[in-house]
Amino acid sequence: MIDMTSTTVLTGAVVFSGFYHGINPGMGWPLAVSAALMERKHSALPKALAMLALGHFLAMIGVLLPFTLMSTLIQWENEIRIGAGVLVIAMGVYLLINRKHPKFLARVHPARLALWSFLAAMAHGAGLMLVPIFLGINAASDNAHLSAHTIMGNNIANAFGVAAMHTLAMAAAGALIAVVIYFWLGLKFLSKTWFNLDIVWAISLIVVGLFGIFSVHSGH
Image 1 (cartoon, helix red, strand yellow):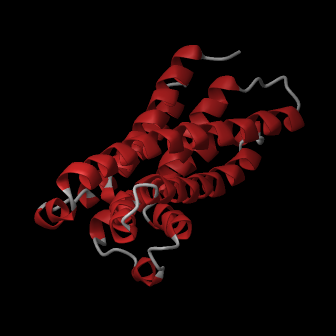
Image 2 (image 1 turned 45 degrees about the vertical axis):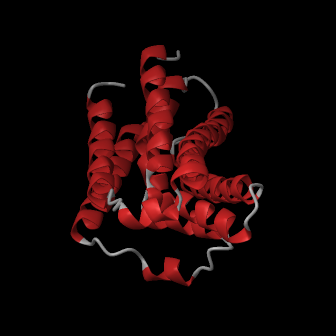
């Protein structure tokens, strides 16, 4: 039986994390603004934003799909969810300790925005942030009496749904900021304003991991 309260809360967390990723300049919206200004075409902005969204979506799917197979092991459901929470917390602690951005991102040409977005999301643990939430949604919607095949199919559908919902929220938030910067504020605003969400990002990973572990112990 579906736990509607838990599912609603977790779905809200998916959307919120999407907005958060979209606002974070580390997910690439400054590159979209730069691409549009360099090409001097308004049409370049939505194209660049679409490529960033595509890369982000593929990164989310790349992280979530393996967990659709693991979550069919119903007898190990709680252990898997706790393990995922610990993994997310560990990623957050690592990013708190290591503030340097991965050097390989600088080697990816900004014109390859989909690839850059995919690698950035992977490197910053953006997909991992969704794992405890995703597993919570599966736990709220799975029925122990269903076959493993049916559960896996439901979980795959959930994975695509969560990734799509998250990416849409991320794209909307990033696009809003990019449009404001591109049409009104310009790159000078970016050069004079320091965006540093690294600490907030790392702490948010730890919070999400703790939330995932807490939801297991609270029976959700």
